[in-house]
Image (cartoon, rainbow, N blue to C red; front, side):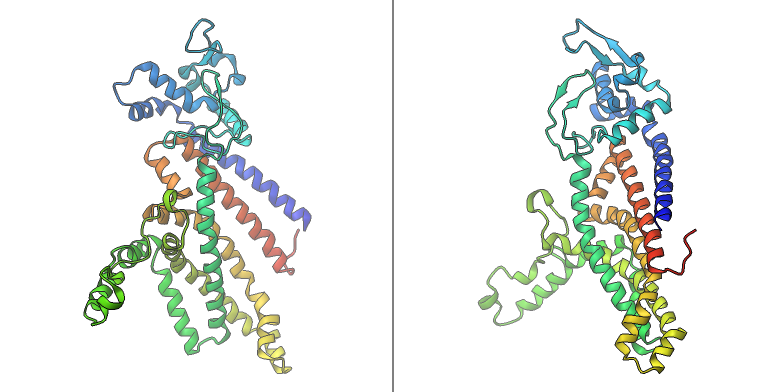
Length: 395
C-alpha cells in the first residue's frame, strides 16, 4: 500500500510539473503582450518610461538578476535606481521560455508569485520584503496576498457546501436504494433528477430574483400581509414581510461572512450537486441490497438495520466515494460562477477579475492552484478507493 501511494505521489508531482509548464507557456509565456497590457492599464498617453516600469514590476519575478547579467542594465549614477541597476524589460522579454519558466518555478516554490495588476499587491502570501525591478527593497504591506485571502473565503463557502451536499446526497441515495422500486425510491429519484437539471448559474439567478432583497416572494407576502387587520398593530409601518432578510450580494469587506449572505450561494451549489451523489449512491445501494451476502444475512434473521449498516453500506459507499472526491474540482469550477453572481470575494471572483483585466500573474497562479487541487483530490480518491475495497490488488 505504501509503495502504491508513493508511486501515485510521484506521478502527481510529474503531472503537476508538466501541466504547470503548459499553463505557463499559454499564460505566462505571453510576455510580449505586456506592452499592450501596460497601455490598457496606464492609458495610451502614458510615457514610455512609465510603461517600462509597469512591465518591470509585472515580470520581475520571471527575470531575477540571478538568471543572467544580460537582463541587468548598470546605472551607477542614475538617481532613479539607487542600487545601481535595473531590469531591461525588452531584454527580459527576449529571454527564452525555458529560462523564464525556470525562474518562475523557483520563485513559485518559494512563494513569490508576482504582483497582481488588479489588486495592486502580491498574489500569494509573502511575508518577506518585496524587491522591485530597480532592486529596491520595501516592506510587504499585505502579507496575506490575493490568493490566500480569497481561498479562505472560498474554503468557508466550500466547507458548508460540501458538508451539506454530501450528507444530503448520501442520505437520499441510501433511503432510495434500500427499497428499490418502491414509492419512496421513485419519489426521491425524481427529486435527485430534478436537482441535476438546474445548474448553479440558473439556480443562483432564480434565488436572487425570488428570495434576495426586495424579491418577488417577499413582496407578494408583504402585499398579502397588508390585507390583515392586525398588520399595522403587530408588524408596524415597516412591513418587515416586504423585504427579504437574505442578501443577493455578499459585501464581505463590510459585513463579513454571515448567514444572510451565505445561505443563497450555498443553496445554489447544493441544489445542483446533491442529486448526482444521491443517484450514484442509490444505484450502488440497490446493487448491494440485492447481493448474495445481504440475502444470506436476511435469511439468518439479522435485523434490518444491521443488514444495512454492517453488510450493505460499506460496499455501497465505494462508488459514491470516488464521486464525492471528484466534487472538489467541481466545487472549484462551480463556485466561480456562484461567486460572480453573488459578488462573493473568493477564489473564483479573483480569477474572473484577473481574466477580465488581463492580470496574467493572477491568472497563472489561479490556474496552477486549480491544478494542484484537482491532482490532490484524485490522489486521495485513488488511495481511498483501495482502502475501502481491499479486493483490489495493488500491484
